[in-house]
Length: 282
Image 1 (cartoon, rainbow, N blue to C red):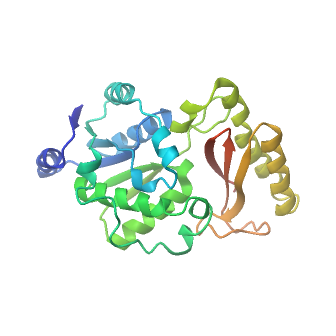
Image 2 (image 1 turned 135 degrees about the vertical axis):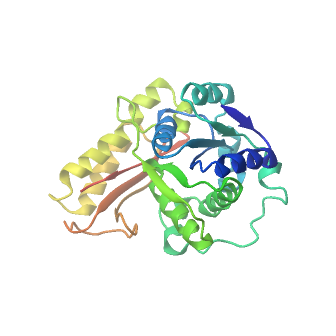
Image 3 (image 1 turned 30 degrees about the horizontal axis):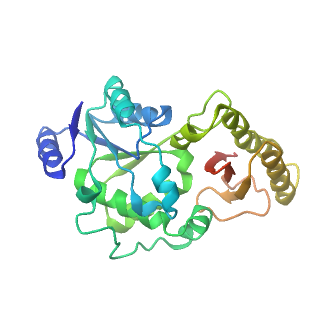
């Protein structure tokens, strides 16, 4: 694996590879890598000749400075994992390298409805920051494919919208959510959970399974209320949302329709750690 910290060096190397007609797969991360990230590396390897992984904790997507400051950093372990999983290139830029003219977003992205709901409602400005950094990274790397995980379902939809708006010639590969044995979705934030909290946090997966088992049997209001009770009785401190949506648009639904692809999305706090998860229902 080759590690690059500077854009100019990375681009020179990529230009040589593209001159050899090598296809480039890109996995953007904020580090603290886990099995979910590694599964995306593997998917990119199956599709592409060369895989580039970036590690950059993007300050512009954090609407909470404390959350940014506490975001886990395990760079030595990350490098080891990428090397042992045969990643070709690691891009490890500084903040100045990504934002040489400062962090301010000159032209907001016209994301529409999708930016106003769920994560957009509870984390104002978050998706503008996500689009800002992914747009920048795509302009640096010019990959053929970008690989992202289903756990961040709304983020994938937002990035796809940005790709359309900016006319990036890149295709999206979506990886399945990887889970621990308990069902807890793999996440960099899990590092901050104690073993006891991890065990309790698995209730977020149990609540999704409960909804899936009962979505055709009772009203959505009753289903969400019971799922909320599952979370709170298991030790979650606060729930931002439990929402049943159209998987194509994220429009909230009020009743079951077998012809509509449904996704359930949850965001809740275990202690001061905010966890998200989702599950396709049909």
